[in-house]
Length: 476
Picture 1 (tube, rainbow, N blue to C red):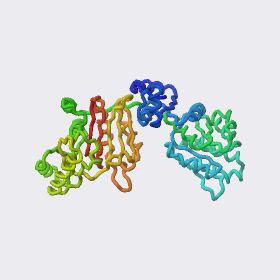
Picture 2 (cartoon, helix red, strand yellow):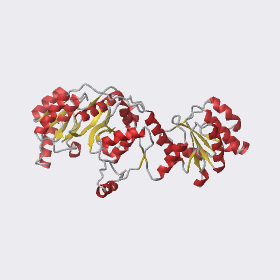
Picture 3 (tube, helix red, strand yellow):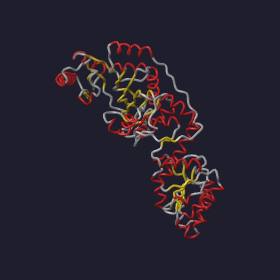
Picture 4 (spheres, rainbow, N blue to C red):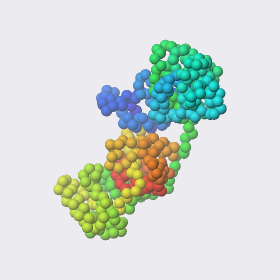
């Protein structure tokens, strides 16, 4: 695929097809150079690669990373029965071989199965007294004592009967591949995949009940694709949540902005979010130093002041945010210094005023956003917030419409989710509140298509609730 012209229509049709057939996609134009080539070569409309990635996931299509994966994944779908979960049992004639398989487990979303005591007892007599019997099953010493075929057969049969094992991963050589096939024929509903070490591909021809690969990573990638497709087909779509909001207030704000030919929303973005039930830290825009001091007394110190100008997109980059202001004396200094600095730096800049907020230091900084993509419509973004958002690039996205399940996936697929769940003694964050904010943001973007971009950065999330500290919007 090069690109799509109507992303919404594509998603609608793609979901229906993926419910009935396996769809594998190789997207051209992943690099910036590739996108340029597509635009100049065929006139196709190529969106951002991250958006295409999530589009394929939501459509139930499996994205290929290379041409070779077409053969690899097709083989898995043709040969392997449905997986019974993501817990794997490993049999290996080499300790190192088993470790190489385990090294790639987490990357592909799999876990090591815990063998039941009953199954362990069945094979304990094949192992030497000093050997640990567990998962992975390292059979080399046992094979030298009892014979390769005998031990491998018994180990495979044991894992095939264990309900805790969803799929079996075999590290094999040529002789044991035939043994694995014999056992697989007796247990046809148990998925088996193998890494055939150092053997040419033609040796696996004719083995239809097992998918064999030349590296552990290729096999696990195929298992992950198989499981991803199963989850999509079995998934029951949840209804989207609808909240009671003040839609008219947002209509009025946008109408005033259009009347004034205003494309960038600053304090207006705060009011829009409040109208849709996303809480904003108390603030006030002022024009004079005297007003600033009066407002700060009400909001209380320590305070934060921010320049408010449609000509400035990133206030922090231009020293347009001053934090930790402790009293009126410091407020006077920073107010005067900020105004004079911007007038000197950018004489023609339009300054609407200064926003004053009470400083909030607790909680974790997050970014939530909505962006209108030319192909797919509004895309909802979530990730690690603050001034290092672009440097860390820890984010996820989903194409609207989204439901609770999509919001949960967005959160769990980021690294910051581990911190939000509670890390090294810190209390867990209010994930219910966070999911609701994502859903409310989706509702806002859906209700007002003229919103091109809306960034909430940061949203400070606490153990209960949270507050938007800064926001910016762009409209048509």
